Image (cartoon, rainbow, N blue to C red):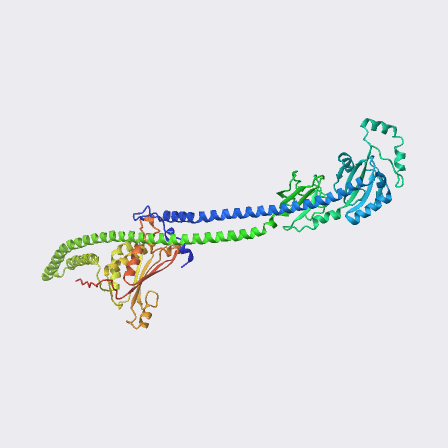
Length: 638
């Protein structure tokens, strides 16, 4: 039995019988569908709801944890950067307050300070003093930058305006990434001149400006104008980058710094080269550390933790790939989905199989009820027909007896008189009347036998005579439709102890079906032979091995036709009640079903072989001695 049959209702293969005489008491398709839908909804809705809630809660919790971890890393890194910058800025601020302008303008003094800064703090590349005109008067470092004019540099303008400035990472004159920390120092005891005074002095000193700038050397101390000077230090980005490169970041993590225009200030692993635009949008300003989702230029969704560094244009970026961070969740999600799918499959399987089993039993019971009602109606109809046939036969037999008697008397009178004895025509007419009376008598006798056999009783039946009786009812139809009938039944075939009426009904149904399969012309062949086997071909052997009675004897009667044949899809269903392919021609789908039931009641079995366009063979195997479930009634008729 196929596993599909446990889930597929049997009644789905049968056409609806609502427009037929024998309707089902229930709409089984509707019952089956509603039962499956309601039961599945009651079972699956809570399961799916709980799974969906758990899915969302777990995912939300994991995403919140990831956001917190990214935010924590960004916050801790921001503090480290703040400390690094504040430390270097405080050193410069201390120098301008702890030293006089004359001390800082000394090349020797400034060289010693740089050496101490390099050994004590690290990261300092060079240091210089810049006057109020933006000219670097004293410089200590690895490059020839003394006398360089920084007056047009943005960082110089910012330090003059704010008093302290930390620049972006730039290439500058060195062609090497670095950033500048500059501190402005106002001369003690002096005041700033107004803009008008400065303009007048600048106009007077304009002619000597070039000479004064060319006279500036490391040995000459130039009195600063406008009461301020700038202490400038260059910071090596390698020491700055170590703060970010040493971070241990999961999820394909990346840590770098950008400025407010989105230019990368420190090396990035995956989001661009230094001093190029990053592929992640510049986040909105916030005084707090923030975390949000952003999509990069490659379409990847990232968890971005960012923090604006105070007193700078720097923005710290901690970027982690969301897909990598959610890998553990994806594994859990897969298990959750597999669990849900398996659970739903099992639940639906149980619901379908159980519902199909219950509704199939209801359907079978209803079929049996409908079939029983039909059998009752059919038996009542046949009983009525039998009684009518018996009455007609008796009414016909009486005048036939008189006609037969008078015809015999006339023939005798003709025989006794020499005048008519030699008149062959008159004698032939008398013989014809007597022959016709005998033919009518055989017909009425067959009708009487049909009427008597409506009651269940066991008698000895000659199979060949039984088949001839059945064909006698249909002989004229076969003649009109040019159907050739071939009967191949041995004369020495043992008689069968059975109910004659049931046997007639079995073969009458099979012959009628064969006639219906042949539209015009064709051959109907009926043959019989001994077959010493049971229903499965080994019944007799099993009984012999058990030490009981000898092998049962069976007879196989084959009814074959050369009609249209039966489709393979219909072949398995032809014995089902109410299954018919001729509903438009008035078929009820009960002929073969009743035949199947009668054969089983007789202790036999029926098989069918068919090929579309070539014909059909019904093989009925019956025991010679049939038993009923009650005391056998032996019938004898004269």
